[in-house]
Image (cartoon, rainbow over all chains, first blue to last red; front, side):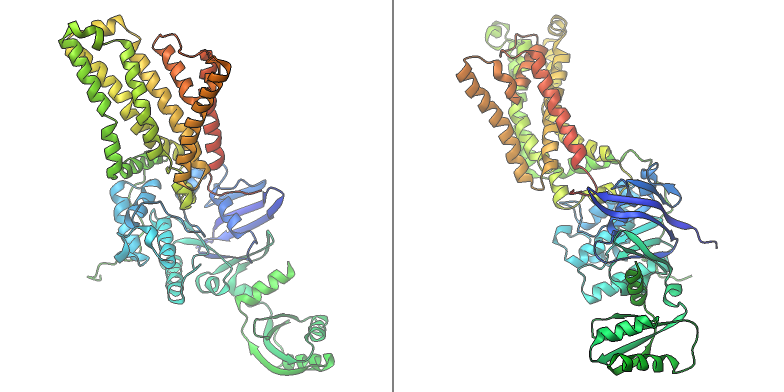
Amino acid sequence: MAETAAVRLDKVSVAYGRNAALKDVSAVFPTGAVGLLGPNGAGKSTMLKSLLGFIEPKAGRLEVLGLDVARRPLEVRARLGYMPETDGHIPGMNAVTFVAYCGQLAGLPKTDAMQRAHEVLYYVGLGEARYRNVETYSTGMKQRIKLAQALVHDPDLLFLDEPTNGMDPKGREEMLELVRDLAHNKGVNLILSSHLLPDVEYTCDHVVVLDKGSVATFGSIEQLKGPAGRVFEVRVKGEVRPFVAALEAAGLACHETEEDIMRVFVPGGAAEPGADQRRICELARGAGVQVRHLRASLPTLEDVFAKAIGES
Amino acid sequence: MSPIHDQSYRRYTGTRGPVGRAWTVIAWAGIRHMLGKRPFLGLLVVSWIPVLVFTVRIWFAVTYPQAGEIFGVTPTMFQDFLEVQSLFVFFLTIYVGSGLIANDRRANALQIYLAKPLLRVEYIAGKLAVLASFLLLITLVPGLLLIILQVSFSGNFEFLRANLYVLPAVVLASLVRVIVASFAMLALSALSKSARYVAILYTGAIFFTSAMFGVLTVITRSSRAAWVSIGANLEIVTDVMFRRTPRYDTPVIVSVLILVGLVVVGVSVLERRVRGVEVVS
């Protein structure tokens, strides 16, 4: 099946007062599951809110499922489901009433909305708690109810803004399973905005990386992870800076992780076995540091992200 | 085929209603929510006690014409009724209206509402309909009911024929009260995340303007400053509707402009505050 665009942005600029949140952004989000990655303040939520029509861009054109957001906002929102980042509910309602109400707001007849509310609440794991007032829910349950209200009218495209925020490990795992199931088994297109790389890597096929209001990179995760080149984990004893400078001078990229381990990218096609390791060791010797740990690694989304953010 | 019913997510294949009707969903939900509160039902019942009193008065006047001088049915009686109801309009506006938007803002519900296929104006219309329905239920509905009762008890249309303006006056005076109170309260509710704070603001606005008018009356020894009081402006406009000389010296046109201005300011506040995202420049 030919891949079509779920979302298209054409030279979109958004500003809050004098602060530019999105700068001349052009991007295409294919159908399927797309991760919207970026550090805090990169413009991810602003992009989603612009696509929902909450924020009017200063310039550019936004298109969702082939519909112009500026001209046909209601049609766009009728086909969208939005799970906001912050807690949100209608005060004074229990879960099933709240979700059914959201269904009715989206145009579902009353009985259908109620039936769908029960089904969706069971699907997100709130079946047993569906008659409880939403205000008494835990953080994890509030995340699930937000997903339920976004799903009740069966949208063609789902916007999930940091869906695992504040969830415990088990809850996070279950939420990611739901998102993955929706995207891969239920045929729901989705855009997952997150700063958590493993979440995106687990659930999405494509990724758009935002940094400081601009698109740093985008494409299929597999393609982005597997460029011509190899990755090594390196730990050295001694002054790191000259070593990093030597690596970069030799055309190798590197970035540090949390545990003092650097990830070194060796560009280019396949090399003779052991040649890359020898090259790294020689550069280390030249920089006056001892290599204490050197292991071949697999490229991860973190590498893609670090490379994109570093380049942008 | 598996005999076990699949409880997982299913695509929806049913029909969808046309866009533009979401305000009715909001209105009905709000009305049902209020009707589920016992204190509110109590307030609603109490606000109908004057209807009962005025009904007895009409019956007495029709049954005992000799008591007409004391209990006579006059156009002024309908105005008196609406002015009595102003007290309940005040309480009901606070009870129903203060949380209408403030509670949604507190619970971040606006982003949920506005991510659905509905316009901001539909959201506002839905909320407005909740408050306006209850206010009309204690002003316009009983006002019209009293007219019908007068006709029923007397068995003729003589009173109405002699006072043709009473019917439109009751309708207009009720609508003006309801519209001004609804827009003012909704605008205040959109300004805060606390229903309690909104209630205090509204009470303050009503009492402070009245107090100011009182002080200015004492200082200037004239009622020309009645325009500063929301209640006085409503009284002046109502006097004109019932073909009476306005009780204060403020020109009617000034009172009308003040009331229209209040509604315009309310609409402007709602336009700025009811948004899916709060933008802080």
